[in-house]
Image (spheres, rainbow, N blue to C red):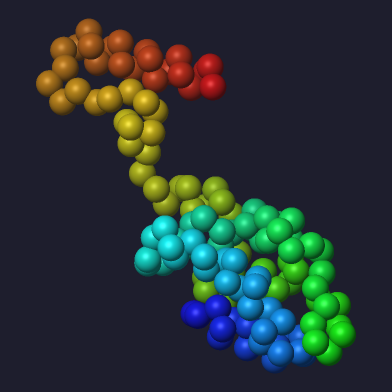
Length: 130
């Protein structure tokens, strides 16, 4: 959904004009600049992202009807309209496969058993250190 359509939905629900809500809905979808498909949502369309939105814009906004609207409610509306539920950041991360590069230990396809053991030990040591 385009940020404008989210803003129209907010105006219908809370009063005021769509322009009152555009900055919030645009913030959620700014991540399309990094990734053009629905995976951009992994960066802000989750429960932590809703709290980040509140940190960015404050606890409430005052719309053009002079009604104070909680930013968290607007954020929840945005995520629900796009996702159909309120995922957590953990849910998004669980959708991504863990790769050797994420552990800073390169995989060696033709490694010896000793090299494989060393690699496994390095991964385990990295997990405990940090």
